[in-house]
Length: 268
Image 1 (cartoon, rainbow, N blue to C red):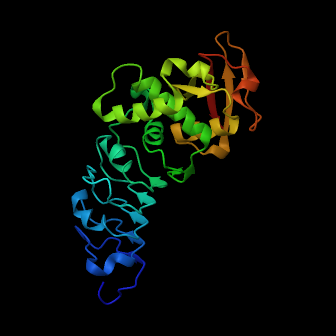
Image 2: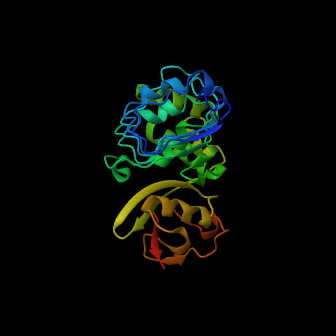
Image 3: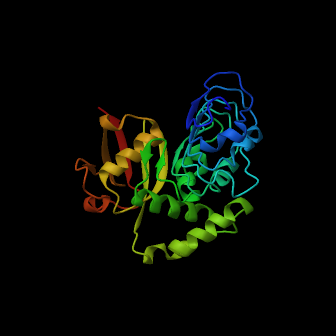
């Protein structure tokens, strides 16, 4: 770095690096790409945490298993982070990344150990609820409706009983915004308990009645890993009556859906 002290962007893909230390010349760096290097331990990146202008960091496929940030003031300017294709096994990394005050874009991939159906809430919703400053998640913009839905689902899941230590701060913050879980029905956001189904897999979700069909298509595409452009949705009530949800800009409330209705996803 002493040869190029004014470099703002550096790409070091697949250079077999276990760490990268730009030294005293790194204060101008705004973007660092370390994709494919065997970093393995996030502690090897602590040297980058105090770079005042670092805004973008690519850690795709770097062998990371855990993420721990010991100081809330580290990575103070980081706004974009890619941690896809790392064998991260726990959810603690979500709470650690919430310490980054300017993090707006995050790319991640779900661990094979995480079963969304068994957990009752998908990982995307947990991330959105826990990191309030996020605007884009895996290249998909987080709408205000999706954020409200994710935050309320998080409260329904973890705020109705004594939350664990890792969730307590998030629950307390969300209660200040939305109120206690029992008061949701009085807060102007009616939630529908719906079943989303695709090829035999059924996942239950509480979704706001104001959610548009277009937004629901986006949710199902991410949930079942489908191409949103090829999705069509049909709603079935408990008596088997079927409706095509074929108006993208209409809300779920327009179709008079009820709790326990099933939304079937088909790919055209």
